[in-house]
Image (spheres, rainbow, N blue to C red):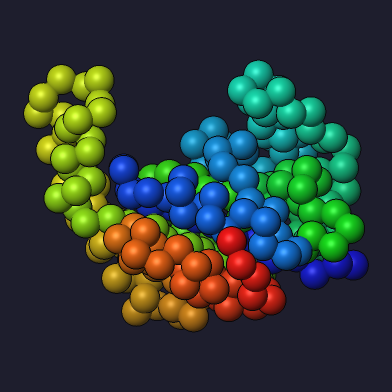
Length: 217
């Protein structure tokens, strides 16, 4: 079977992560998407088995159809779960996540998937623990700039924009803990300011991190 490499990209509010994803789209052997599945938002915690598993897959299938007009082959998802996790009978939501995206985007010479899902850094340890060969990309920005951007472009009444500071506090606390954990070699973090200063350098760094050949933007 093809060896697969799942990658979670995440970051706080107004971090420039959408731009960061666009810059690395088109990397050889890689599929890069945004918000299509976003399983941590729609499925509660593990585990899933039997009818619960079928219901979970059906729920994501309905979300994909309504939100993105994507048709999910639910039978294929079940087959991938059995193939990729042969010793497992009770599945985690990360494993379901992997099977769904694999069914949609991994084919021919594409063996790596990246999905950008905002505000999911607290799920990174779960993702890395439950999926072999997985990695995580953290994108962040100067918190002062993020707060100013949130204040200017949010519809929420003041002082809601001040919450972005606590959002960033949680982000950096989680990232620091992960960098001091057994997952530290499977994590990379990059600032928006560094990305816009040298976009090509950022792309090279991510290509090296994913162990993909370097290519120009």
